[in-house]
Figure 1 (tube, rainbow, N blue to C red):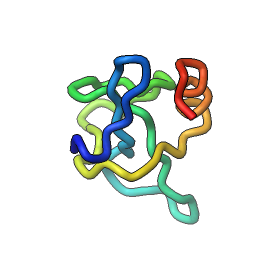
Figure 2 (cartoon, one colour; figure 1 turned 180 degrees about the horizontal axis):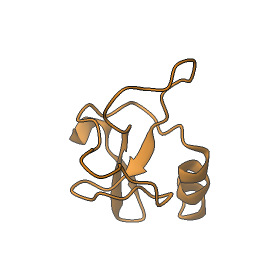
Figure 3 (cartoon, helix red, strand yellow; figure 1 turned 90 degrees about the horizontal axis):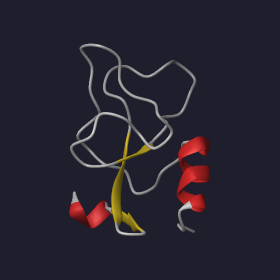
Length: 75
């Protein structure tokens, strides 16, 4: 997981998607999530009884997470 970690201003994030089935016709959305945290940078979180997928992606794709990462100095 560390090889895919994003470090910004001393904070570490990984790009994760919610576990479970994706909505048909939509591409996966990857959020900036701090390791060992349930809520993403955009304040989205998995529903009750769900979790984040364990396989981190190469990049964050959530528009709101990207905006907030930019505000703290990423990209």
